[in-house]
Length: 169
Image (cartoon, rainbow, N blue to C red; front, side):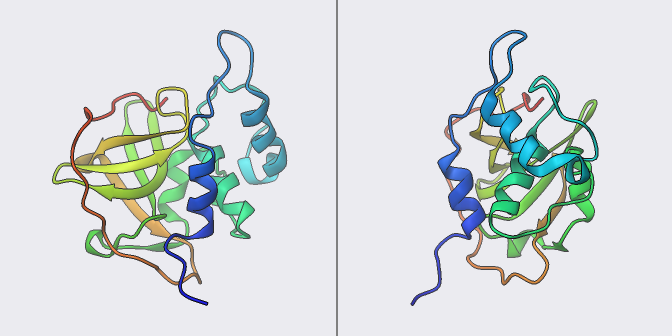
């Protein structure tokens, strides 16, 4: 059996592309289901509305489905900056967890590639959905990989075809 091209948590994350928040005061049963499966112990809070930033919920549930313990207080994006093991930028591989600074908080998602100015991030709560977005490299505050799991793959160069995101909340 050969080495997988992508880690299991990233394969799972790709299957979730297109999942959206519910409009208005309604809530997505899918997103709330992820939070319920994770529970308050992992999330660090009672999570009961998809209007609360859910990028950390998305990352935590994808990882947990692959048997990986998520970050403590997983709903808080910046808590992922101390999780797992650090990766240097030149060692990134698809599935790496990237943490970004943003006004009012942070953002977390999975690395799938990069161009000269931005990382291409598969993440939740990007424009209120699970999407692939370009996020400025200058905003990245941490690059992480699950402890005890071998890094598979290498940096992936991609074309910059879409504007840089500023909508991750």
